[in-house]
Length: 121
Image (tube, rainbow, N blue to C red; front, side, top):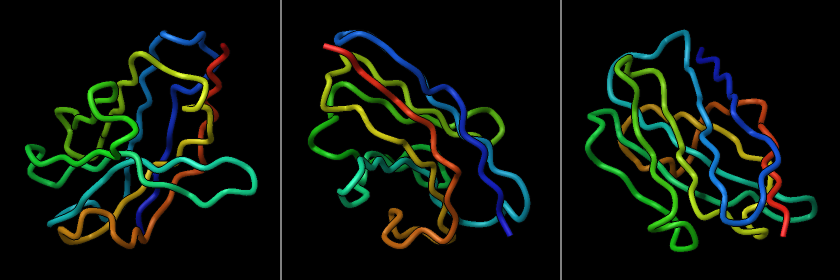
């Protein structure tokens, strides 16, 4: 079992920055990937970014490339999402995700509770 706890959401003006954090606890060993998805009411949850267990392989959604950076903390069970140049369309509930193996979060088995990010224009 893996427990994910997110923090760092909030309200920011367009062009501003926020950093999300996700701490994983429980059975967090072996090969795994962690990352972020986001969702708005009535829409499907969409992939944002992922980092693999080694910490040196990342992928991003095209909509956030060059603006968001995913990284792993010194403790490998912590992941961050630095969000710069935020746009109103980045507004969503952001969910931390965890998946055993190295499949780039194709089918996460664990989710955080979500943290709201609101970008005002």
